[in-house]
Image 1 (cartoon, rainbow, N blue to C red):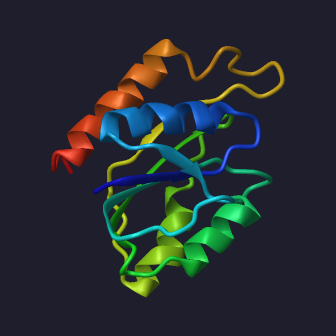
Image 2 (cartoon, helix red, strand yellow; image 1 turned 135 degrees about the horizontal axis):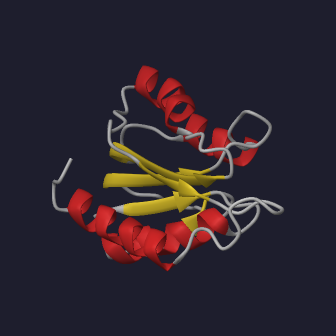
Length: 139
């Protein structure tokens, strides 16, 4: 079974999380409300960079995650700047023995007047397709 956990302050990553969840055949859960996470073959983790770092809610979730809950993590996210959360997620999880896939999904997200309308329908379709490929052993 796969799982999708995300943090979204503006709603951009939530849209992406729902598309990823649709492709993975599961329901997306906010990291703030994620409870009883059982062993996920692939755990999709989504977020964005806020003031140069991942959110505190996502950081806490990752710090409490253990190997029994995730065989492998795949990162996704949005940002206005184009920065990905993958490096920071990897720095928290790999020392705990939780592998993070090299391949991730990232698209632009709207913020103020930058990247208006993103993620758009094409971004969401690509995210869904990415999750389908990934969930079938595509990584």
